[in-house]
Length: 118
Length: 110
Image (cartoon, rainbow over the protein chains, first blue to last red):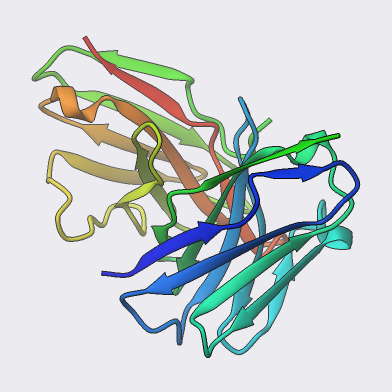
């Protein structure tokens, strides 16, 4: 049974860079797409972007200019970097995986709350 | 504002049935599958239904899904107290080439 665990600072200052890591255990990351998704207080889930095992990325256009996803296959980890954050970036951030768009996201991390404050 | 539209709340008595709807567009549900998730407080979402009506192993057959056109539905029969949770739908969006989600429905078991 795969397990995903997000880690990173819970508090980031306005205008700085948010960095999170997702550690994957219990299954090989090969063959999957790895996603970052967030949920701001009182709002719906928002897809941030995805990275394939080969390193191909796709980002939500609303965040594309500020987002970078990367993958470290040697550590079974993938990471999110979001620059120039503001209070609007305060959210619970989830990492998640899918193998096919038809089969849905089959595993999620438990999420980590990141608060942006000056 | 979510891309997929769900009712914010639903309720039913133990043993009864409830249905939650999810409305989208031709760019998401209309051309891709609907997936449903259950989320308990403080936990990550768990997959309930994938590919419109398929249940992962371990999900009780009290949970079922369907899709028609640009809408999907999640039906829960024989409500139990442990079903009280948030439920949300998700679908692939063709032009985004990524996931879109419903705003979530809070299910209360009376």
